[in-house]
Image (tube, rainbow, N blue to C red; front, side):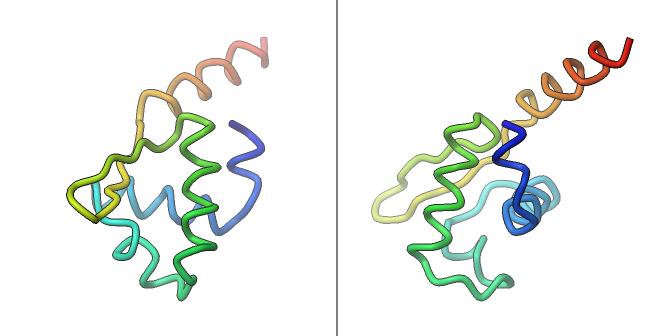
Length: 82
C-alpha cells in the first residue's frame, strides 16, 4: 500500500476520489491530462493495494475510493510508533 502512495500522481487521483466520490476512469483523469492507458495503469496499482475498487457499468469503468483501507494503514502506522 505504501508503494502505491509513493507516486504524487496516484496520491492526487486518490484525493480526487476522496473529495468527489465514485466516478468514471475517464472523468477521474481529466484534470491530470493523462492518456487512458497510463491512467488505467495507475488505477490498477491503487486497486491492487486495496485503496481503490473498480467495477464496470456497461462500457464504463467506475472507480471508488476504499476509505477502510487507508484507515487500516493509518492505524498500523500509529501502532508502529509506540
